[in-house]
Image (cartoon, rainbow, N blue to C red; front, side):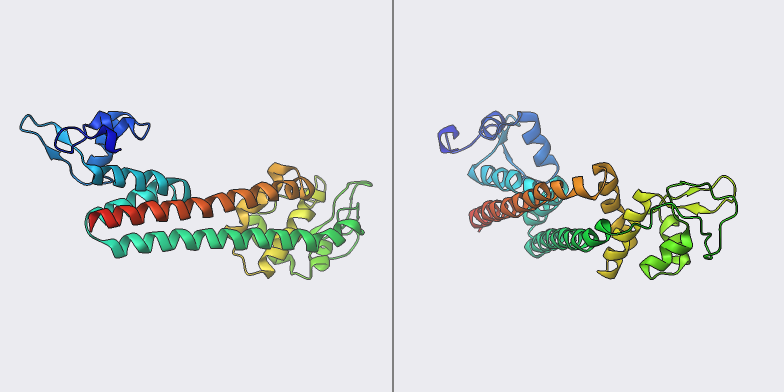
Length: 258
């Protein structure tokens, strides 16, 4: 940035912008939003930026990949108004979220490992003619390719009411038998129920499980999802490394302000 300094050690908005691959208007917007400290003005009213503004912009742009735009902006605003403790708290919360995401990934991997033996053995999704209470289901079509709530709950060691709770939460989507009105769980429903059960045993809340189930459905099952775990690991590692880079840039800005 030093080569762009104008006479007197000042930077024009366009100089600061070019050094960071931005437009001059973006730089002005960042100042107005409090992401950059307030710039001095010439007698004609033009903004005059300094090396401090360059460090601030360095810090903000470095924080975004690891913490996201909103948190990065909030951190910079806190620093610029002298509330460093608030900035550190925001950063701590972001690190805590990364740790929670790592634990979630581990829980999914553990659940997939636990489900592997069940997937290899007899499946509750095989056609069955038992009704929810275990009696023969009247009118259950042969080869229906599903199971009713009673047998599925028994296999998982749960009460049928628990499966109905998961359904109300949008985690399970059984169809209804046209003749009896009973819930029928196909192979995908059984897979989802097993995964939910494993995650619940790991202490995860239903609202935390919901996006994971959506990922399983989007991947088309557990096996394709396993292939995405490597990418998930990579994204978390990239976030962690970006947080380190953001911390270094923020520390440089804090030193420049001191």
